[in-house]
Length: 115
Image (cartoon, rainbow, N blue to C red; front, side):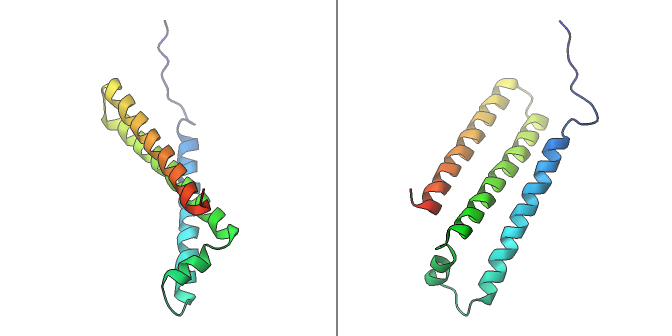
């Protein structure tokens, strides 16, 4: 049996790029929210209800949350792979994190779209 060594010039490049893209999506979302709130004369439930009444903001919010969850998955996965050595514990942590992120995604859809 040959032991494959996972190294090379492009190993991890996709994850690095995805981290940057998701960070840009989250930054744009944060700027849009801050600008919108600064332009409002008052803060309150009505301001938030008006902001999220349209499908564009709900879709953009869902994109933000999916970016956040994927960004978090890559970060947590890399930290666990680097610092948790026993494979069984690493697998358990990965499964728990994936389960939590899937549940957060379902919950986000329920909140944003009222399903």
